[in-house]
Length: 113
Image (cartoon, rainbow, N blue to C red; front, side, top):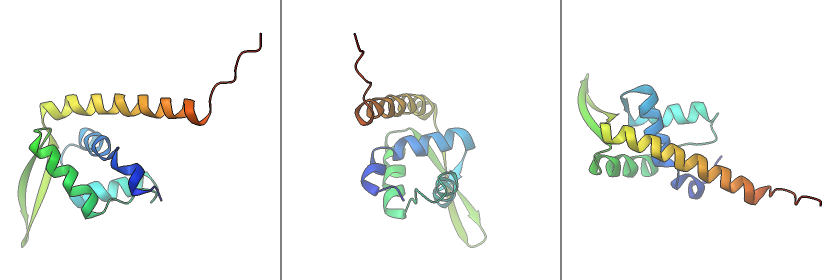
């Protein structure tokens, strides 16, 4: 399982990317999809997921809508236009970060002259 410490910096990217790919999703759906995609290596609990969703709502990157399902109300999240742009930028930043970390973990061998 991936540590929560490592996960903190990538939650925004994960959520924006999933919403971009799947349209609207509710919190449990997001956490289950992440768990499926990562074969259980990443488990998003309530305390990790919802603060990020609330921050993205406050920043206008996602929007929410309530839907009654029987006696329950489910909140669905989807990207705004700002969120679509943020998703692309966040993904590019994350890829750059991973590529940079690879240089640190496995530095190129010096050229033999």
